[in-house]
Image 1 (spheres, one colour):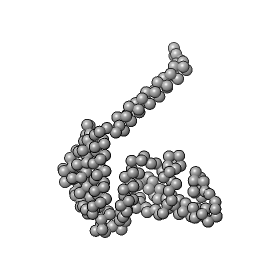
Image 2 (cartoon, rainbow, N blue to C red):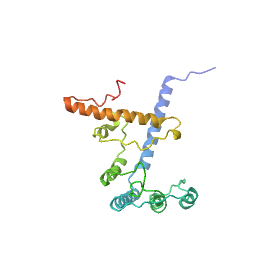
Image 3 (cartoon, rainbow, N blue to C red):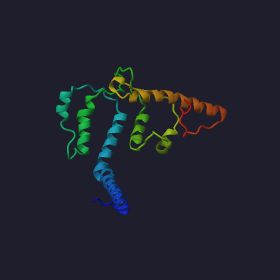
Image 4 (cartoon, helix red, strand yellow):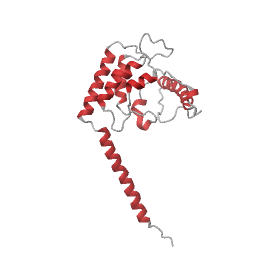
Length: 203
């Protein structure tokens, strides 16, 4: 004989589960995002290294084979974690020298990285600001900035079987000149474009 579970019991169960998830999320955020003295010390060291990198001529660096890099770097993912100081040391002494700086004058690339010092410094602030530019709701402040130009650095269909990067590149190529043209038209005609309306609505 089957017994029907009372509706009130189901509601109570859902509420308990929701409260449990909220409590777990709160505890997790407190553990991960607390700005402890140890975190502050690591942040200060990262800031110092970033300023040093911007102020000094960039070393070209070099390429290291995977076996040698694995042997020198060791195990980087552990149950207890490496800790901020060890991660900074690993990056400074092992990983950073084992790559080629794309902003170096001797890096003869067809797509060089050539940001200004101020642009690279501002990237630090952007990186810690939790910016998401996918919609106007989260990224209104970032989306309001005028676009001077866009450089699509890499799109490699052979490495993207779902063709996501191809679709994204196509959308960027369509939306960027459309947005620039719309801003110029508004400036010329005295009109105002509602940024909540997608640029490609009429396509």
